[in-house]
Image (cartoon, rainbow over all chains, first blue to last red; front, side, top):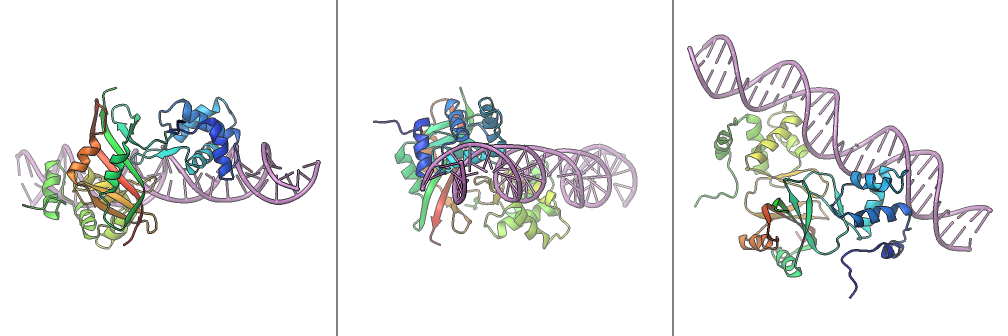
Length: 141
Length: 141
DNA sequence: GCACATTTTTAGAACAATTCTAATTATCAC
DNA sequence: GTGATAATTAGAATTGTTCTAAAAATGTGC
């Protein structure tokens, strides 16, 4: 069974094409940066990392690319309180744990049945297309 | 059994005092505005509503008061994606449902055992002080 | 009740993250 | 290649919020 828990650089071209979009170097490098170090970087951090490969890229383009990748559902945008949006190529159903000490963010895999149980608390008439679960606290590692 | 699902204007004075803070008219009116119409207003919306009672209040004060009330745990701050922070006097454990059609936010009461189950997905070494659950979708009403 | 230290409020400036604008550049289809 | 479309770019603009410094209000000791 192929691993579908993240998109790959190869599948990105196809996914973009499926939405009528082009696989530009900027989009590919932004995506590769997210795959390479999965520490939920902000747009600014992605910008800094992408620059070493594409020194003339602009911050606006980084925002555009990230937005495109989110639209194509190969990347998830993660928000925590009012902090800057962070980006994550993990497509598995998962929650986020924000470590208050280090400021880092960790993925927490969610069993599908738990997601079902959570959705089951919605009263009749409510139809959720997405559920977000976020933890705040301390982690050992 | 007294209802502890929200603080009351009367208990506010005590709660503030417990933190060494004063019960100013601005703080009281901001809190009353939140109690009166529980539609998860933004700071701007609170500002507009408070003005009818305290016409000379400033937006900075509204932000200060809201921050104080959140610190004292009589009000919860609610964030959804990058939208403005919204405020909610419901102290019961609850999730938020964001209706994509209307832009409105509804409280969804959470059974304590579900919160336990959700916290139980955390690997050893993770200690969550808070869990946030947010739904996005459509609701009938 | 009065001084005084402390809190609180205030207006406006500053700030951070993001989005917009309009011009330029790249790319695909023919 | 040419023309239409898509994407990138730099910088300005916007939004929501926080900061700053001064003025006003308040509780406390006398």
